[in-house]
Length: 384
Image (cartoon, rainbow, N blue to C red):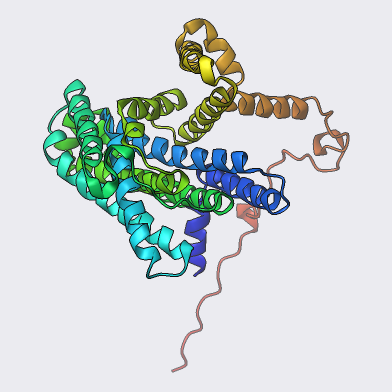
């Protein structure tokens, strides 16, 4: 048992768990505020949006950031989860009395259905690369939403009238789902499978030469990302009613991709921050710019995104980013500690400042001089 604890302490690093620990701490604070009545319906709705946006952004980051493949069909997987998950929830609510069990089963069903379609579309599509893969996945998203548009059992063009969940409870379930998704993703990325995935991103030919099953891992990542997108779609389906096919167009896929790019491809923490900020910006612009100013909202949103992209990529702003980056701040803090330690006066009682009878650099030996050595006694002779 002690050996396992020692290995755990050796492998455990706080930076790997700080993101979901902060989310868990924030969730506890939000629950307390909600129970105290400090959160209105609008705020709890915004929190639910942030939660499913984080799941969508981090799951797409698996494909784009860690695998290195460009996919524009993430909205299609969310559409599958939203329609199928809420439809299953409506059917199960008549049999199962617990709403929590119903939504958990609906999330599982929506995720599995999205994963199955991810496998189906991934088998032929992942043989393509770059723009060709993006076009195929974009076409998949458009096909999925148009199929639901023409299915009468899902409401057709009028949308599916799903049963919304209590907003004060939904944001809690959504953030718990975020924490679970982050834990699963981080364990995947730090495992040998995660190293194989990043090796494919860095150099597919070298990874194949090292014996990595490239086809398997591409399908694996695509299916996992589709599964998480389906879960996010179920949360969206319980958040709003009716579920309209127009929500899951290519603009929605582009918005998720923007979250990944702005947060940094291959960075889960960046995807969390960018998904939160973009969702808040959209929410505030939609609240402030309504009616005749609704057209200006898209323009302001685009300008904000352009400014963020310029700040992240223009070389003139690089010194500012490096100055205030967490790595630089940590290095400055360590340098300050080292400087403080060097200014401390030397100890006046240091051993080389105290006079002693024996020089500290003298060489001591326990060997006696050769003249003082004695020969060992002879063995006694046996008597005759």
